[in-house]
Length: 629
Image (cartoon, rainbow, N blue to C red; front, side, top):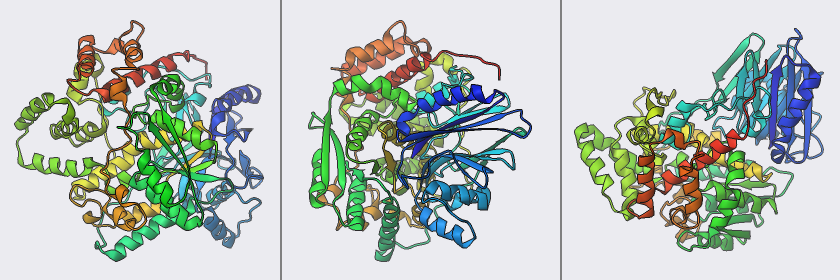
């Protein structure tokens, strides 16, 4: 797990050294254990290739420093991530005649690429983003893992390219321009994040999950190598299927216990993290170090559930409670580390949780992806209800739903989310309404000028194969929602603390197995993750199994009327508000007053707009520079 940066440039090597040093210094938190730089010219001498690396040593601590080279520097790599099946791949490659000088997964990855080319990507079981310079082909090959767990941001300048693990690295390049992508801003107001490959900065994009890119002096192309498998329901729901699922999950956990440094687990007290701690203890045969976070407000703190699991498995358990002051003291630097607005209120607690864990371990396992893999959110059964409702009712009735929703009492906000979704006939608008910020209509009312020429997000993975609504929603969340929100958050917050986060539920083999399961494996009425509950029923405390899905709750609604009120008001309504220039102030004021009076709970809207303003201010701190390429 590391940080990477690099670029191609017509500049001299001496000029490039200073630029690359600044880029890697900006992401030193991703790799405090070492750094490395590599420079070479293309055969035409029209371009310098610069590869930079910051290392967090996890496997083969003595070797594996990067950039790493093989075959007389024909291949040079800078790589961020972990290849969990590197031991098995190394044996396969040895059988094919490859020789190894280290025990690192870095060398396995590079020799796999040398042997199989881009075809190596579908053999990798892990999380990764990397760039490889092939001196013979004169190509820079870049790739990102199937689910997008590891970031790979880039921008292009004339015929050249600049890439890195975080915004903080890109802004150090003299060709970075911090102009705002206003269409992406409009998308943010609907989705609460920017879906797809674009970002809030014009020209800065991400290599999409499951894709690779090739740069040469002839041009730049992006190609897809991984497709989330279709749900085929090849298995019956019986004891054998449940046992096979447990074996597959256990194998995913086992592979992620490979480490030459101490590791532990985030333990929320929910089913996902509890299952991981149970399996980690079973596989390792010894207590696990576990970490939980809570709040002084007992209504929101769920550390009691984490303690049940910690006591059952005798884990070395650590807890931390955070306060509104903790939010105020760290929200701005965390936003810049995130490289995007902190659209999820749990971003800040995860930051503190990661720093707590960093005092004891260097690797943590966490349960991200389980809900999207196994239908854990109420959204999944709710969306099925709505899908059927919309099939048999005329659209004009949606207006009545909207009126009812606007008049719901404060305490019925969850029903309000479902009613809002029921009023969206378009599939993507409906998905945005579940976890998003505003409906397209409400967003256009808040920021009318932004939507004058609005281009909505287009999902390029639609399939005309008669799939069920549940399968479609799950596939959307795995391919769009997860990489744009929870996985991105998990990477940035753990790496900010210089620790590695591993996510066993985001395993390609496990995902392929789950694609063969019948609908009953996912939903049992209005209870999700049915097969996980059955597989872990003897391993997880009953109180954890019986807990309804609630997500990680943060007392933001109270804090926005208390300790965070003045800070939030200044961000949104001051004369120097950067986002305020886009809003109809009367509409924004109404949202504010309704929340303060407790007529409606607008915590999500207000927090997301606050976070956006903080990000725009931090972005504005980096002045636009234009340097000839």
